[in-house]
Image (cartoon, rainbow, N blue to C red):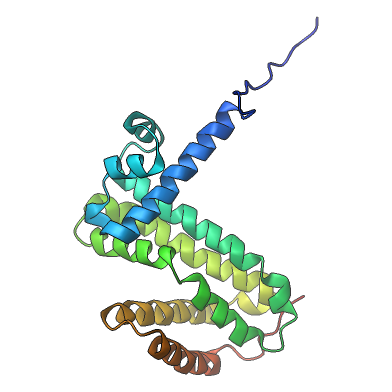
Length: 214
C-alpha cells in the first residue's frame, strides 16, 4: 500500500499558507512597534496597527486576540532580531583588542532606536495595567537572558558566574538610564559624552580577566 504525502498548497505568488501567515504576523509586529514609537502605548490601538500593517481586523485578531498579546509579541520579536544582529558581531569581538569596551559599545548600539522606545512604553504602561504587567514580566527576563547568553558565548566560562550576570544587569541599567534621561534634553553630543564617561566607569567594574574564549 502506497502512502502519499500532500504537498503544502502554494498561492499564485508561490508561497505556502504557513509562509503567508508568518509574513502577516511579521507585518503586524513591525506595525505595532511603529505605533508604539509614534503614538505611545495608549495611542496604539489594534485597529490602528491593522491599518498600518495592511491587514484586516479579523486577521489581526486571529493572530493576536488582544492588544496585550500583540504589543508584548512585538517587543519580543524586535528583541530577538536585535539579538541576532548582536550575535553576528561575535567574530569581530572575538578578535578585538578591546573586547570589553567594544562589547559595551555594542550593548549601547542595540538599545538605540525602536526597541528601547517600545520596551519603555510597555514598562510604563505595565505599572497601572495588571494584565500587561504579567506579560511584560515574562519579556523583560528574556531580554536580559539574551545579553547573558551573548556574554557566555563570547567569554565562555568566565561569564558563567553571578559576578558577570550582575555586571551585565548593571551595564543594561546604565544604558537605559542614560537613554531615558536624554528624552527630556535631547542632545546627541551630550549623550555621547555621557556614554563615554559611563563606559569608562563600567570598564573598571568589569570582572577581571575577561577575554574572548574563541
